[in-house]
Length: 87
Image (cartoon, rainbow, N blue to C red; front, side, top):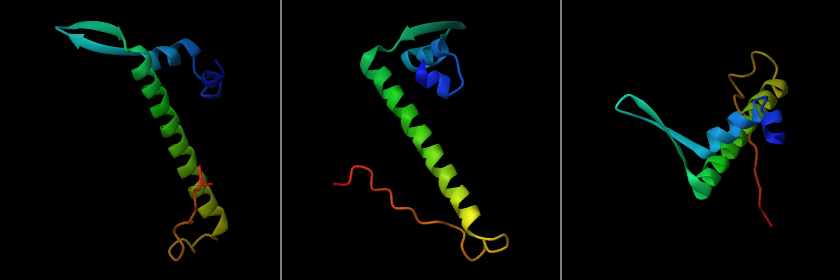
């Protein structure tokens, strides 16, 4: 419920999207529960996609705020070292 609230979506729809596969066979829509392992893979893929989108947005936002307008031709990126898990 917490994740669905953060994503501004219905918790039942999110749970269904992460745990169910749909296929159309001979014009008929078939709903199949995908099991724990595949559901966990779907959850992890969603988390990875959200992290990627947020990280890309953050780098773009930082780049725009650090460089004045018209300066982007010289400095069109910001280098960020992501050391998650570094010990």
